[in-house]
Length: 480
Image 1 (cartoon, rainbow, N blue to C red):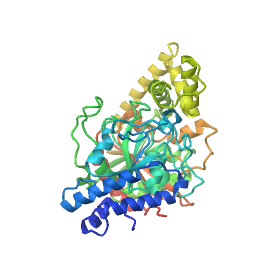
Image 2: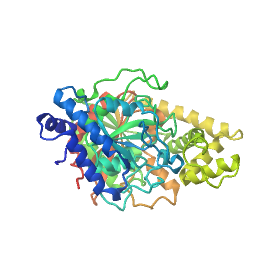
Image 3: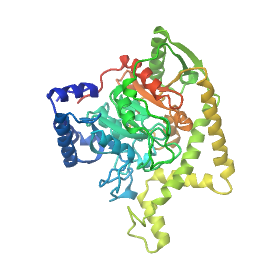
C-alpha cells in the first residue's frame, strides 16, 4: 500500500478502483499491530472499521459516498463514540462505555469516514508530553526515546507513523498544535465555539476545542468543514455559517504579518526553533509580504492566567468522577466518605489530582477574588491586546513550541519546565482565536520544528488559505 500525502490523492485511487476503503482499513490495522510499542492506540475497532469500510465501498460504487469516504480516522480518548469505551486516559473511568456519540464524531461518520480506534492521551488532556496517561507514555516515532507532545500525543503519532489517515484531537492549551509540532504534522485549533463540544469529556469548558491532526492543510480544512457548525446539543456553539474551507484555499494576495519579537530574542527558545522562524520570515518577505515585529506586554501573564482558570474549571468538571455512578470504585471503601476519597485518589493520576487541588484552592472563599476573579480580568485584557494587534496585522507568527521534542522523563520531575512547553500556544486558547501548527523545518538531529499561525476569531478561511501557501516548504513526513 502506498503512502498518501493527501486525501485528494487517495480519493483519486478510490475512484479509479486501484484501492478500496476496506483495503485501507486492513493496511492500517496491520500497521497498528506492528507498531504497538508506540502506544498510540488504546482500543482498536477492527470489526467495526471493516464493517464501516464495506458500507463505504458500496456507496463509492453507487456514487453516493460522502465527503470523507475512505478517510480512516482515529479519535482521542476524550471523545464519546456510542457503544465504545472512553476513559480520558484515566483509570477513574475503567469499564465505562459511552451511550452516545459526540457531535464532531457523528458528523465524520455521516460523511462516511471510518473510525478505527481511540488514541492515548494525557489524563483528561492535562499534560504537554503524553506521559500523564494511566496507560503509559506514547513514543515519538522519529525518536522513540522522546515525547510526542501532549495531550493529543497518541493522535499525532498515529498520523506521523501512518497508523491512520487523520486524527481528531482536542486543544485546551495547545494539545493539538504542540504534538503536531513535535511529530511533524499539521494541527489545527479552531475558534472556540466553532465545533460543538457535545460528547467531549470536559477539561476546562471555556477553553476546550476539537481539532484535526492531518498530513496537509487541505485535509485539515476538509475535516473542519465537516465537523463545524451549529448544534442544538451545545448551547455554547456558534451559529455563524461554516464556509467551504477546502474550496477556498487560494491565498488572498500579499499580507501584513506580525511575529512575536520575544520568540526570536528569548534565550529560552532553542536556536533551531529560532532559525526556522527566521527562515519563514525571510521567505514571506521575499514573496512580498510585510513582516513586522510586535510585542505582547502581557505575555508573562499567559501561563499563570491559563493555569489559574483551567485548574478552577478542572476542579468543577472532574467532581463528577466520584466512584458512585460509573467507572472505578475503590475496593477498600467502607463508607461514603472513604468511597469518594479512595476512589478519586486511586483512580486519578498525580497530575489530575494536583490540578484539582489547585483549582479548589483558587475557588475557595478566601482566595476567589485574589486569584480566580483577577485571572478572569487579565484574560479579558489579553483578549483586548490581541484584538488590537489584529487591527494592524492579518496574522501573527509564533514558534509552536520553544524546543523540539524532549526526552521522555526530562521534565516530568519539574512541572514548571513542562508548563513552559505551552508558552506559545496558550494565548490562542485564552483569546478563543484559531491557530494552526505547520511542520516547516527540522533541527540538526532531524527532529521536526513547528511554526504556528494565529488569525482573528472565525478567521479560519483566511488562516487555512495562508497556511496552504506556506506548505511548499513542508517536507514529506515519516513512513515506516
